[in-house]
Length: 361
Length: 128
Image (cartoon, rainbow over all chains, first blue to last red; front, top):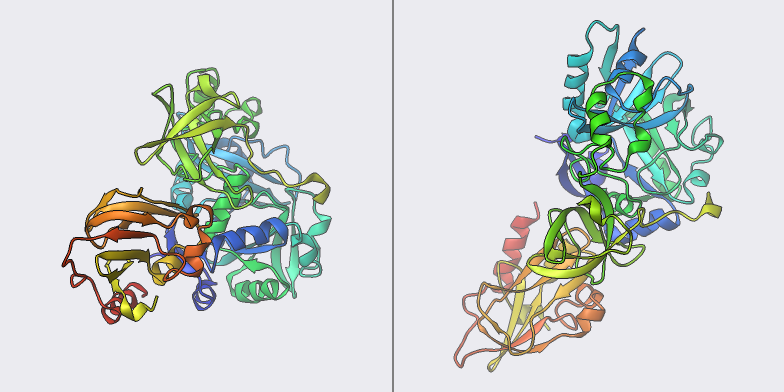
């Protein structure tokens, strides 16, 4: 049976349409996905992301293990900093994409729900003689995101330290009504916003307060259209054990000069391989969505495959991410997408599809 | 249209027969399940359709589904307004949001389809 977050009953009683995702029963939407999406782009949306895995690393060699398993450099992080990176296999393929939080005496790693057990096992397998205690805190804690241009204002006074005082991709340990929580200025929507981690027993209270303050509850449907517009990869779609970070255009999250780590040798080779397919954006002329698996063609020849696609609520057109042959990466190149047997006109475009207005912060 | 006068297919299309002209649409239940409809692909006038076969597709933000003909015949009219305004089907699935009109053979009936009462039983079992 699928796992349930501490907010499961709230979702069900508030019309959440529940679906299985990464081993969890999660709301895909409460009402209209488009309305939930717009709430995040124009005001603030509220997401239960308790399904994300939360792992704590304590012990003298916590940093050493993270450095060994993670492609980014955790050694240069300051306390309270959050950094995106990949966990790769020995062949340089992506086992997961993760966020690492650095604290004075430990680290936290947030992993994908569908990869949690796989990553916990992987870390145990590669721990060697290092002095590290890994605690999986996923089911004893909850995680809630507030995202949108009004998210920070809406969260003023919620916790002892306001998220407004944090830089982007920074976190702090603070308190909500006297109880411990972590607030970070992170997210997966392309908007500014915060993510809160606190004890599972506080979940309902925090959630209700945020909803009362005006954040609109949003499901995984809107989370998907939002991250797609922002061109953020989703594990199982854009990322997999066969795809390396360079193909995914995530080279900024790989620090080959930080010292040895799992997959480094393979990554050095793969970085120089000019034949591997690469992640690109596609914009379609028509309104039919190119879904995962659809073939991308150029002059009648298959040059790649779609990994995610939808009709975007903000831009109101069909967009997709795909992996294509590296000869066709230039924005403006025309191609077609085979959508259930019919060739639909499209062109390669630069990512992301959506970038939040600068003046808004 | 009054839902009581319509007949229903398992795949959530409704049909209304008047003489040899059958109007076909999608039920409110199906439309509510889909939500956020963004595109409807329809056949052309004169295209043949046959019972149980796909005659088009309806796409929502989440997914795409086939539309199945509840009866056999030739398309004589397509609701072209849906192409520019798919919200018509969300707002009025039994009225302005009709999909196609089909000319059926003389003597054709809708007896193979469900009544409203039978259809409501089916959707009650789909909503768990």
